[in-house]
Image (tube, rainbow, N blue to C red):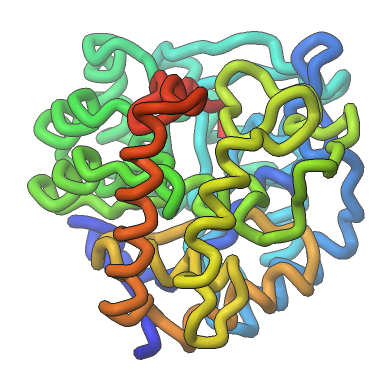
Length: 352
C-alpha cells in the first residue's frame, strides 16, 4: 500500500513521507584534520538529484548550516530556485564554522547566535522562511534549550520560521522540550531496522511530534553495497569513524552490523523490494509518525529511494519476520562479542 504524505507533527505542515537528507551534498568540511563530510561531491549532480526528488514527489529536504560549512545550504537553495513553494526546507543550527576554510569551530547555543544563524541560513538558502528549524546540539542541557524558546517564538511570529524542533537522541529531553515549546513539532533522531527507538517514538505519540529519522539506511549499510572487505576513503567521515559514528570502524563496516543486515535482508526484500526500499518500508510500518530522510547525492539514489513511496510500509507478515530475526539477534548478542553494541550502546552524540 503506497504511503505518500505525513503531517509534520502539530504544525499541520504536510510533507512527503520520505525526505532527502542533504548532509552528503555539502561536500568536504572538517574539524582540524578529521573530515566531517562524505568526500568530494559534484554540485551539478546534487542539484539534479534535488530536482529529481521533487519530480518524484519528495518534498522534505533536511540540511544543516554546518554541512560543508554553509555550502550544503547554498547548493540546496540553488537547486530549489523557481520551485521553492514545492519544497519544505528543514535546516539546523548550533555548531559554528568558518565558511572560507570549511572548518568546524565549535558550538554556540546562545539566543544571539540563534538569531544570527537563521539570518545566515535564509541568505544561503535564498528563501524568506525556514519551514522546520532544528537545534543541532543533541546533548544541550534543557535549561540552555529553554533559554532559546523566546527567540524561537519571536522567529515564528516574524514569519522567518514556521515551526521548530530538536535533533537529539535523548527521549527525556525531547519530551521536556515538547512540553515547554509552543511551536515544537518534530524531533530528529536515529531510527532504522538496525536501531529501533521505542521510547522516542512513544514521546512523539504523546506530544504529537513528527519523528524525523536520520540514518534510516545505517549510513549506507542498508543499501547492500558494503561487505566485510569494503574500505571507505579517508576523506569520508565514515572512513575515520569518530566515536559518535557506530556503523563503521577503522574505515570498514562494523562486522556486527553487517551480520544484522544479512539476517534481515530476506524479510526486507521478500516482496521484490531492494534492501534499502525494504528498510524504508520497515520504518513506515513501525510508526505512522515517521519521516525517514536517507542521504542522497546522485539521481540514481533518489530514484531508488523514491520508488519506496509506491511500495509503502512492509506487509504485516514481513514486518513480523524482521522482528523475529531481530529478537534472535538480541538473544545471541547476550552471549557473544557484540554485547557492547546491542541492544543499547551508548547514545550517539551525532553531528548529522
